[in-house]
Image (cartoon, rainbow, N blue to C red):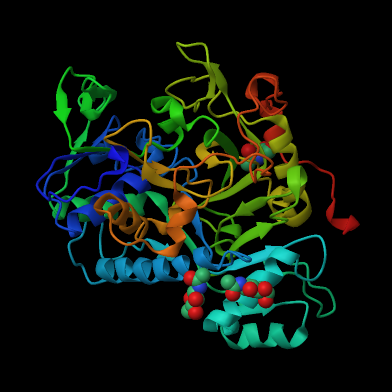
Length: 495
Ligand SMILES: *[C@@H]1O[C@H](CO)[C@@H](O)[C@H](O)[C@H]1NC(C)=O
Ligand SMILES: *[C@@H]1O[C@H](CO)[C@@H](O)[C@H](O)[C@H]1NC(C)=O
Ligand SMILES: *[C@@H]1O[C@H](CO)[C@@H](O)[C@H](O)[C@H]1NC(C)=O
């Protein structure tokens, strides 16, 4: 089929649209395979902003607003992702080591910077023991020889083992233990990566490998495909009026991908999770308490629907603690020029008035969690300092999409992160390169093919519900300023 003709000419120009994780990783791996003419386009001036949200950067899948990204290998029965995470962690560690040893430091970074922090993942649910997903994760990690990294804290012997292994700080982050009885489960694999540093490092790496970058709000901004008669895509046009011929155009635009490629309708949709940020003041003892040395990444009722699916991080280097809520995912369906509805991201650039507000439901769930599990925030008079919607792309089956686009010869897509792709930044481009080159593929690639919901197939993520959906932002009540103040009520006593 012409649409999936492998590219073998290493001198052929390749255009990548999007400098987020899929674009950066593709660029690195293609360059490592010897492709000598790879150019990445993005409308964001990342050379200047360095992927930093406070400097004006916004990227649905790339760096922010969800500045830290969880690294976890616990994947239930999905052992293929578990294995790939373990491989990615080796790379994250190698990148940390490169930084520590001062090998090819990206501009502005020092040997003191680290990208990956192995502080562990603490899981807490409603029941004292493991939920079915966690149980499978522990079993399959054990099969992979990682059993010693898993601590089921309802077992006092496991608590002792965790303490002995140096994880005493992570066995009870919410101070729930009573009379020596602990709750939850600690997965000592992983922790988090600093998203901005990870992207800066990857961009620098790609640059050193000879990848060209056009990062500019006009010269880097995708305007349309260059098409031959018959529809074959032979490059892109950018907003400055220039044409950039390419043998292959890789679209990796995170939440913007479905707007650029309407063919993705039904396969992927742009959705938003909710993020809250809590700035801990300089004189507060909570800075110690929530530092990554003393506090792990946590996940709360991960598969429990609208009142669960919260996760959070220790303090970042700016002493901001972040937590996220994905129990309700929101969409922003808008009509395109053809009258078709499609969700598009909202950022401070598209809609300044809404960007830092959250739906009321999100704030309620987050507040209740904080009131219940971290009441010391309220006791220290600390409120939620900022909130934000975090736009990314869900596929209907929660798998990525890494493939040629069947109806657009010359176009390839790498997207559909579904909220779990960032951790694979160092390795995901390998699969892009395999597919582009037509190499024999690893088994995991079958999940990432271009696909459609089969008749009768139940989607993992219900997407494309349009403007009538109760979670379309048009139908959702947004929070008010006062909602960000933590309540006086103590839920804690009810535990
Ligand atoms: C995962 O890795 C283990 C070895 O660590 C291997 O035995 C197993 O076949 C792998 N599973 C998958 C699905 O890749
Ligand atoms: C994961 O563990 C479950 C439970 O032990 C088992 O049924 C399943 O086969 C495992 N998956 C793989 C790929 O080993
Ligand atoms: C949190 O909100 C309460 C109530 O409005 C206020 O009294 C308090 O000063 C706020 N704390 C901070 C740190 O802003």
